Image (tube, rainbow, N blue to C red; front, side, top):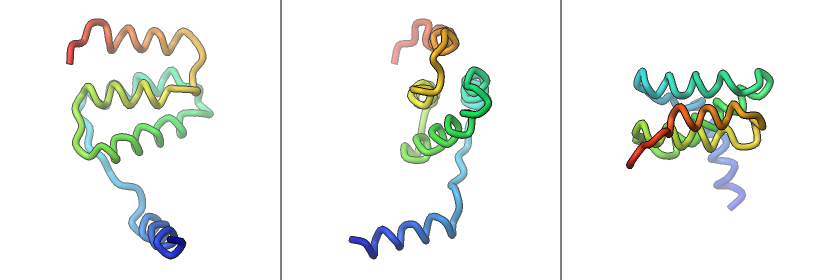
Length: 94
């Protein structure tokens, strides 16, 4: 088990972070959400979003909305998170 874990770490660092492709709307959602996160926590937010979308593989606009909301958890404790939810989930049916 230990050998496998070491191999995974080497493979990850050699290839670097995976790139993801976002539509204009998806990018707007991520950047709008990042703007309400305190500057010192934005890297954490963006890393969370990138990791969750990478794990999903293919993703829709709804997935991006869900991931950004989940990535906010614990990073924002103001009404900004509520305002974000109202803006992007006013009455979405899936």
